[in-house]
Length: 290
Image 1 (cartoon, rainbow, N blue to C red):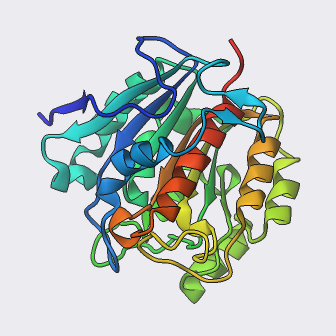
Image 2 (tube, rainbow, N blue to C red):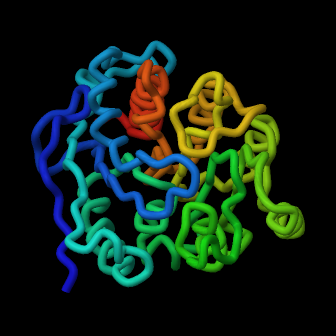
Image 3 (tube, one colour):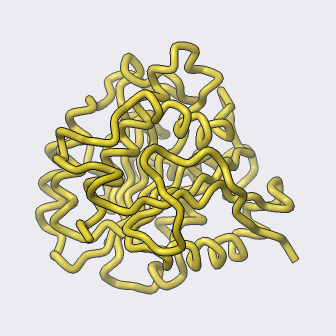
């Protein structure tokens, strides 16, 4: 039986002790399928470290991590057999994280490679017709397999598509992938290539929609976020993400993740500071006042 547990770490900015709160941070430093530049398993603790360089107050949200919400940092997920996570122990990890997610109204996961998003989608959410997965990513990640595995950072969204169907999956910002991937995505109408296209799609979501938002740091232009495994030119701007966060407040974002930050390829720390900033903004945007 695979052992899955949480270990304490340096807490995220503004986090306080407690069993129940308004929001929680959970690190998942899992990385096994990096294909170009690795290092994402260092990201959760690096993001927490760089968060110490920013303030708890967000002038964009007009909210404060310390004053307006009770934020808890649960620590990092540790798996006894991490190399066997996909697919052998995926269901065990999903069940464990489903229990963790149930402790607070909103959970922010810090990855890790993008395959970990599959572990954040609970069985109950997969069965919920009102649940949607919204992905912000430079890559389509829709390959049937990659490097011989159906569970890869380049194939994970294909698994999510099989779980959810095209009606409940939306990939925004993609500008890299195989011809076949783009053909599939266009045929199924699951692409929103620009921020405006995504904002238009978000306006059609019913107010009772429940969302998991998956943010790959490489959706941003590499001039802003070079510290990632597969940087791709012609990316989005930070202001685009802030607009998306505000628009998503009309529905219920139950969880989000921030993945594919690679500290070894971020010598100046600018990508880490940006990742910490985005983490703060998502927490405050998607957490209701107590």
